[in-house]
Length: 314
Image 1 (cartoon, rainbow, N blue to C red):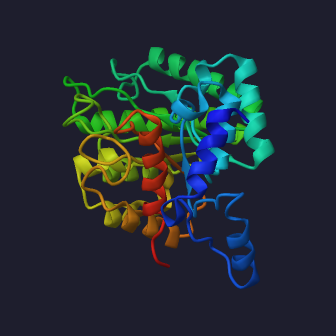
Image 2 (cartoon, rainbow, N blue to C red; image 1 turned 30 degrees about the vertical axis):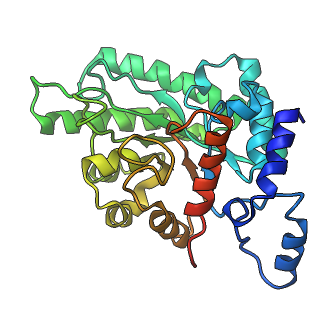
């Protein structure tokens, strides 16, 4: 263990309730956990997933050091949007360490080209491109054991009626599912806001993504609900999660405005996380946001923010 990681653990364990979450245990197990607290930080209730490098002021840039640090802090998942772009050796090393520590892994980005129209078109060239990309994703999944792959369907075509585009997206997704589903890989569609971050994209809201998933009607096509984006696009976060629940496969989070850690904006993450927990969600919540203060103290405040948001009553 490097000295900065060891020093952080020591500091974290003496900050009391701000860092130590009440374990979801009972009786003698609770007493045992409290006795162990100075040496082992209690895991979070939900699988919040940092990315490699999120805590680089403490863990540096090494993949293994990052995973160990996050595990030491109570996280039980990681995510890596850029997994496909990593050398195969790093992919294997990454997943082997997660498996050793019993940690889960969030969706990796399979296709997210914001610059072109793609899924919205009925085109042999688009199908050929998608087939190549899906097969590459299947190879990554077979090699690493990853189960979820993120897809953004690309830009909206201003020259084609939206209903025709929707039909093309549905057909293209069915085509992609034919490739990924036999390998046990699930596509998760991410609606993104067009107001602040991604103008011109086709998929923008949870209701829209839900209707598309229902039309595709495949177990390998679900939604990744990005709470930051959906607060901007439509708000009404908990009712929309409830309405789309059967088609949600994963979550991203970040506060708004700013897209930083919980508590820096307007979203009541304690209520949102409590709702997700009470739905018996066992998947990953990717911490896809920046850090409001990129220092060692700022990184510690991120962990404290998640401890606070995770301290909901049940």
